[in-house]
Length: 476
Ligand SMILES: Nc1ncnc2c1ncn2[C@@H]1O[C@H](COP(=O)(O)OP(=O)(O)OP(=O)(O)O)[C@@H](O)[C@H]1O
Ligand SMILES: [Zn+2]
Image (cartoon, rainbow, N blue to C red; front, side):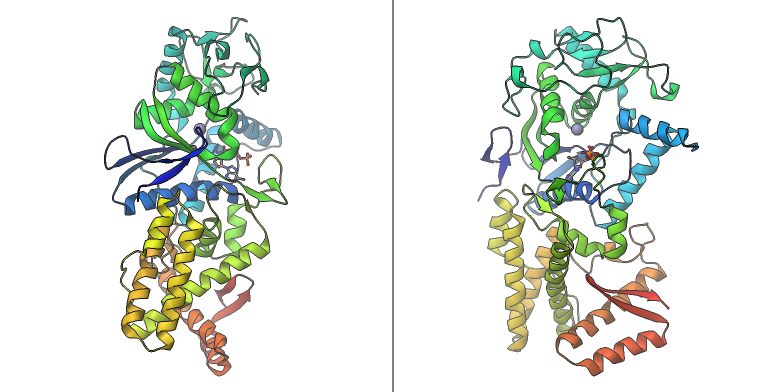
């Protein structure tokens, strides 16, 4: 079976054939590093991590570029507000601090580093060159007020609206903070003239005068620099289809570039039916949730829905995901115990492969995983060692593709912070194994054993705490 993907431009599931045999170029819109990551941001990065891992498991070489927007109105505004309240952090320090928060949260849930993570501020020259090309080709103009601002001329581009199937006449006005000197309110800023109130560090020279890039041109320039003028897939959250991706497509095509062959969009994380968003103030921050939930469980939860569907966050859905994951984990622990070694990855079941080929249908892939767990448990009950070996091999192979192998060192405490196999990580692994044995004893109503495990840990100075999403431990 061929890899199929839902292309949000054609609004159809299509065959995915890489431009260059054996290689995939994937550009994903990364965060605007203005404030701490919420779990919507984590889901977005995670779904592209799943795709990347699946492509790699299919034998493709993946170039995944996920940018960092480290210059933007919101970053400058947040830094200014903090300074007015007595703080001293510069905008660039704020952006860098927040970028590190994002990286730590991605690492914590096992999102692999992309092939490259370009920062907007390191690609200004490419943005200026792209704007020059657009002016040359008659699709961009300097602001009529004589400032350094440059706008994209939407009227000059008949295909404007192609991505979101809108007619230009019906489109919203561009949301530029200072829409001066435009020919049309829908024209969007490519270059924003520096203002006296802005820090000099947020200003770059250009043929039109000092300024900084607009958000949309950043992604067009970075995608082109790192993947070429035409590449396979462009992704991002559904909230970015319009105006961000519509504008990226217009600029890049007007510049004569083939740009993305396919567009994909991840569904949003909602709470109470609304998009989780910094601006709406309804965010569940990654670090808060990571303090209460095991990172591997959070990865399972955020990655369990189909990437295109809405993921409604609730305590109940998180608890259900934790229980589902613990069934898998419990099976791997039992299989390890019976065979005396961590199971070796085996073949991927066809149902799993078919699901992933069908537009990354992770829920169906997880159904295949749970089916193998059930069959494996049956093999344990029947004393069928060969059946168990086979099922455990399938389970571990699927978990590896999904980035959910409990034996992966990434899940050791401290691993995310780069501490690797330090003492804390070793201790966490050992205590974790005992917690699993205790959970198994409790599931079998063998309370003498489960209490004995708790008591021995307590005697060693380790306190267990049973929470909704599993058992945690701390040094007493
Ligand atoms: N609630 C969400 N669910 C899923 N993905 C999201 C969510 N919010 C943002 N994203 C995605 O995360 C990536 C980085 O987002 P970006 O920093 O542009 O956030 P944003 O949309 O400005 O967020 P906010 O609305 O919270 O300010 C983008 O691909 C974006 O679509
Ligand atoms: Zn972008």
